[in-house]
Image 1 (tube, rainbow, N blue to C red):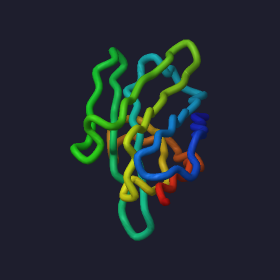
Image 2: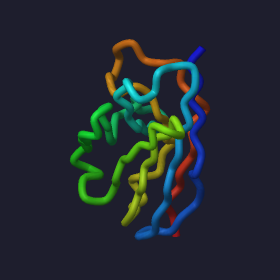
Image 3: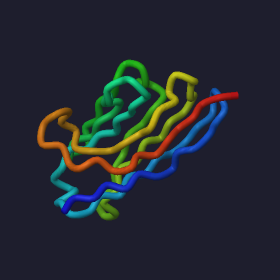
Length: 117
């Protein structure tokens, strides 16, 4: 069974940085396109960054130039480096397959990020 475990969130001031991690198990990670999503109360989960099995990346316009997604296939881990954080980045962050609404894995517990002074 696929399991996704996110970590690294926390409280940070505007302009600060955080690095999120997601460890995956129960699937062939190196063959899976992965993504980071975020959700705020009352809104749908949105894809903010994706990384293909070959390493190609894509980003939502709202985070382009500030966030960097990467992966380590030896560790079955996908990362999200978040710089120049803004209050509007406050959300619970999740990782999953980079295929919104299609063949998604069971969601993990997410990791909360709060950007506030």
